[in-house]
Structure formats: C-alpha cells, structure tokens
Amino acid sequence: MSRDRGLELQRALARYLSAWWPSAESTPNGRPGSDVLGTPGIVWENKTAARFDPQAWVRQAKAHAITRAVLPVTVYWPVGVGEGTPGAALAILPLPELVNLLVAAGYAGQPERSESVR
Image (cartoon, rainbow, N blue to C red; front, side):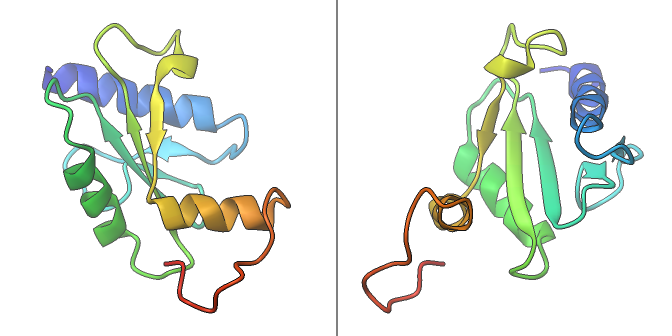
C-alpha cells in the first residue's frame, strides 16, 4: 500500500480515537513509538500493508509498549477499508492482553491456574 494511504489512515485513526481521548493525535511522520499519542496506557500501531503480517506488527507494538501497564494494539486497514468504514478495520492484540481486558471488564473470572497469563 502507498505510504500516503498509511499516513492518511494514521491521521484517521487519531480522529476516530479522539471521541474517547480528545487529545489523541497522529505522530509526526517517522517518529518512533506509538502512531497515535494522547491515549495514556495504549500503544497504537497503524498498518495498511498489502501483505498481512500480524505477528510482525504485534511484535512491533509490543516493542513500543515499554511496560506491562501499556496495552499494545495494532489497527489494520485492509484494502477497501478507510476513514468512512472504521468498523471494518481490525484491532489486533496479543491474546493474554485481551483476556486481561475481559477479566477487568467482568466478562471472565480470575484464572483457575496460578500460571502467568502474560
């Protein structure tokens, strides 16, 4: 996908997130770290690549999440999905992170085994 599309959808992601985080803003081009700032506790990795490579993207988001208190989220905009259709974009995060969110939201109880879920 074109670099322009990636930058446009990174800005679109920030605009979308601003409904929940009014200070959400797209990072300047080429800045390392989260693609969207102003969402405390969350690292956003924005992807529009034609080649679907979620493992590499999640690794990249996790690398930017410097502490366990930071949630690494990758947003993938497939071909044909854009700012007008954010419901068709995919949010990808590591399974243990999703389970922790479900526990915190009351959809699941604490694990029955004492093994680490991270």
